[in-house]
Length: 486
Image (tube, one colour):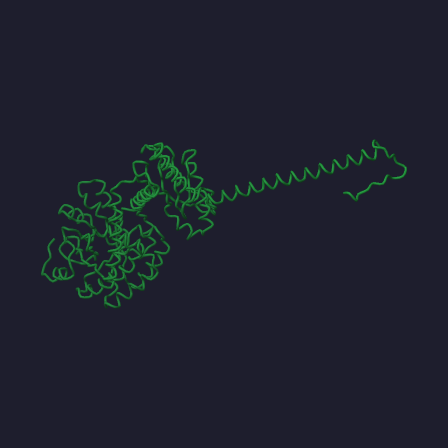
């Protein structure tokens, strides 16, 4: 600036109050103001941009990208904060763990984009189900957690759980398809069920597991007895794997008689297992565990091979019935497993009958139909077990290669006094006769039940009255007698 000089222009005033000087001063002031204003604007804009970016980053760090719910990190921090307030101020709260039922088939059939849309809609429904201010977090694929502040009353917690189940279970249309799912809920109330974050989470998970085991689409509160059930199940899981590796199962056979109860015509193979730690375990308990652990197909193949070998030593007119689980029925290798068992034992296919349940057909009827048709082509017969306890759709009898209906024992055991059960048994017997299907009544325990069944035309009977499950050797002994009495 020291080298800067200003030379007046010819013809203009050179005074301090000249118009040129005033105009130049105004221009310089304006430019200076613009420069300062631009600098300030840039500063505040940069500051706001930085602030927005930091807010966005903080939001991303604490929220789920798909549903915009709180993520596991935010849930964990909130739970720790509530536990601290509980200890300091005695403020109670309730933790609810939510898991969707039947979500995996949506991804498998409609694709993952449809599954993502379902999760977004479920998230919105959960926000509606809870109270204002409660935290809803997505902590896994289809797993959610809810912290309800100030809730210590079981009735209020139950109301929230019921509302969650009701809203989530409402049908939704995704990709022009009607999607129906449900939710299971586990509830832990602080401080009754714990005061530490890990403890409360564990107890809510145990309650959720109990809800799942109770048939899903329901809720359960934590109870100390549930921990014993979990420990028992874990013991059974480990023991069941060892039993599968060591082939520790045994097979018994329950005789099936003609309707007058005097002649054996077949036997149903029943699986038994004695756990070294827990003793005799009912099939209704260990079979579902085997299905969840992926062991049932292996166990089923072993049972098929052994029962076919046993039946090969029986008289030719005695049939063999073997139960097939829903997991086995959806395995495309089942027809090959059946053929190998028959060929290995040298057993005629027409002597083997596979028993399936209505539940197995509900899971994937098209896949089940394909497998059953392949099995039926080999000459093996198919029977529908526990008929009347499920949906009992008549379309099953029309579409599937069913040759026998088995009336469930829950109806038979109420005969002949219960009018409703009597009407159902009569209707099933008449239906079987009209469709040219054989009818077997299971669970016969009294002479009056046997007489009722005999009167209304059932072809075969089985139950403790006519014969209890016995070993293969004992069953052969029954067949070799000159006469067999009920």
